Image 1 (tube, helix red, strand yellow):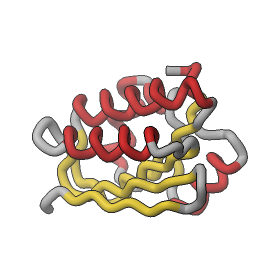
Image 2: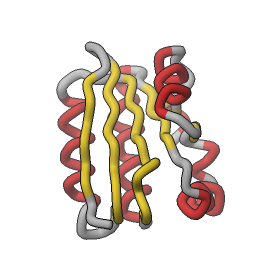
Image 3: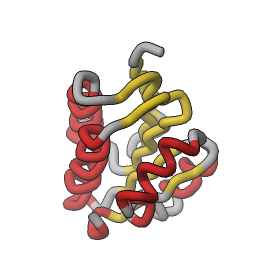
Length: 124
């Protein structure tokens, strides 16, 4: 499956970035560019939806950690949506499942960031 990226502004502070296909060394820079732009545009509550992703690598993990660090000054949060067990396992093996709250649905993730329960920037 080819890489794709879509995003949706939920409100003034909340944004969803959906990634699909393989998010790797070659495609992660586009994800990073979008994530940085969204944060610079003032979004503080982010959901990265990986439910359509088929593969992620360490480059993707680095972009996610970088996103949390960029959110730190504004007290923002980042949550993930992941339904693929192989991708979830990557977060478990690296210990990043303790940094990023991972949800089975976009709705759950949006509720968590709205309540300020996404990954607090201080934990990264």
